[in-house]
Image 1 (cartoon, one colour):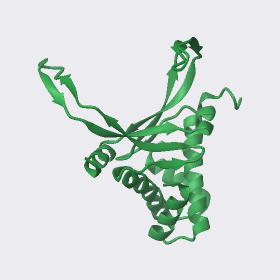
Image 2 (cartoon, rainbow over the protein chains, first blue to last red):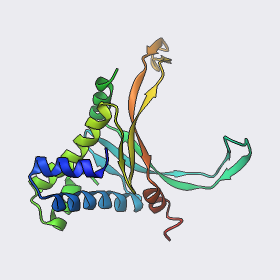
Image 3 (spheres, helix red, strand yellow):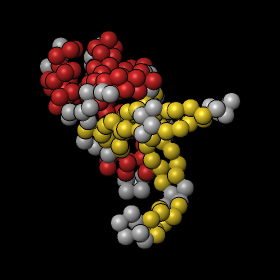
Length: 94
Length: 95
C-alpha cells in the first residue's frame, strides 16, 4: 500500500476531491516530520507514538566483513505501537 | 503533539473543518492498521514504512513471582524510518 491508495481511501470516506485529500495527507505527514525534527514526540491514541531517542556513540560491526566500526552518536525516531494496533495485527493473521 | 493538536493545525492550514480533518487523520491511521492486519506493508516516501514483524515464542518470567511463563509467538507492527525523516531528525545533513 502506498500514498496513492491512502489518498483514494480518504477521498472516498471523507468525500473530498483527490487533490484536496492529497494536500491534507501531505500536510499531515509534513507536520509530523517537522515535530519530530524539533525533538518533540507525536502521540496518536490507539495507533501509537513516535519519539526521538538520543543514541550514544558505540562500536559496531559490519555484519558482512566482521570489521569493527565506530557508530557516531545520533538521534533516531522510535515508533511504539499502541495497544489497539497490536491487537489488530495479531488477530489479522495467525 | 497529540492527535487533537495535529487536527487543529492542519484544519487551520488547509481550510477543512475540524470534523473533516479528524476523519482524514483517522482514515490514514485505519488504512495503515488494516493493511498490516492482512499482512501488507505501507510505504510512505520520505517518512517511512510500516510492516509486520514476527516474534518467536519464548520463555519469559513473571517479574514479580519469578515463575516461568510461555510467551507465545506473535506479530508486532514495526516502523522503519525513511531516509529523509532520519536525516531531518539527526540534523547532521540538513544543518
